[in-house]
Length: 277
Image 1 (cartoon, one colour):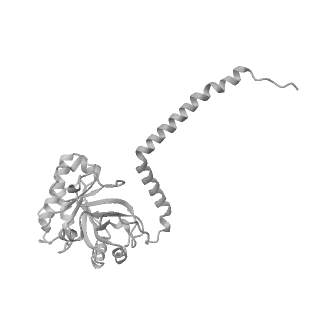
Image 2 (cartoon, rainbow, N blue to C red):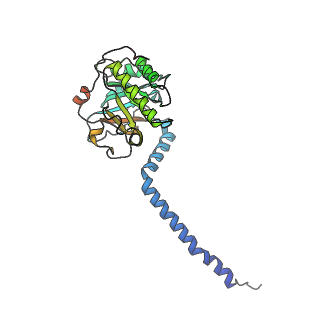
Image 3 (tube, helix red, strand yellow):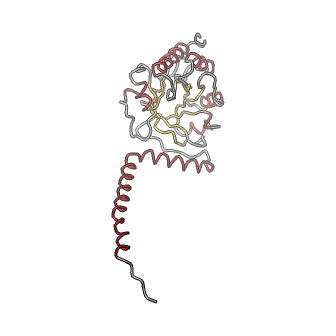
C-alpha cells in the first residue's frame, strides 16, 4: 500500500493559527495575574470562607486565632448566629469586652441577647449592646425598641448603633434617622453612644456627619485602618476569627488604648425611662 503524502497547505494551516493562539493564551495569563495581584486579599478571603464552610462540622469550639499584635485590649461582638457561648472559657482567653446584638429594625429582638448579656457579665467580661439600624424604618421606634430591651447597668459599655445597611431611599433621610437614634438613646441612658460602620460605608455616607460620636470601625485585610487613629476607638479587624468557647467564626476587635481607658468608657447608666415617641 502506498503511503499518502500530506500537502504543504494542510501542514501550514495549523502552523498559521499556533502563534496567535499562544499570544491569546499569554495575554490571558498576564491579565489573570494582574487581576489576582489587585484582588488577592478578596480571593484569599473567599477561599478561607469556603474552607471554613466545608470544615465547620469538625469544629470543637476550642479553635483559637492569635491575638492581634500591638494591642493590649481585645474583644468580640456576637449575636444569635454564634449559638450557645461558653463565656467563662471566652474570658480565659484574654477577651476583655464583648458587644452583644440586642435588636434590629423596629421589631426584632435577638433570641440570645438575654443569655449572652447575663453570661458575659458573670464571666467578668465588660459588656455592651448594639442595635442593627434599618434605614428605611422609623428611627424613633428603633430607639424605643433598643431602650426597652437593653437594661444598661452602671459599668456597662456604651450602646452601639450599627449602621451599614446599604439599601436606603435617600442618604440625607438615612443620616437624619441615625442622628435621631443616637440622640434619643443618649438621652435615655445618659451616655454618648458609639457609632459602628465598615470603612467603605463610613467613607461614602457618614464621614464628617457624626464626628462627635466615638467610632467603631470595621476594616478587614489591612495592617491598620485607613482612617487616622484619632478618628476611631475600636477596630474590628476580622470577621472570621476563632475564640475558645465559641463554635465557629466570630468578629475580633481591638480597643485603641489600655485597659484603664476602656474602663473610663463605661456607662453611668443614668435614667431608665423610654424616650418620648
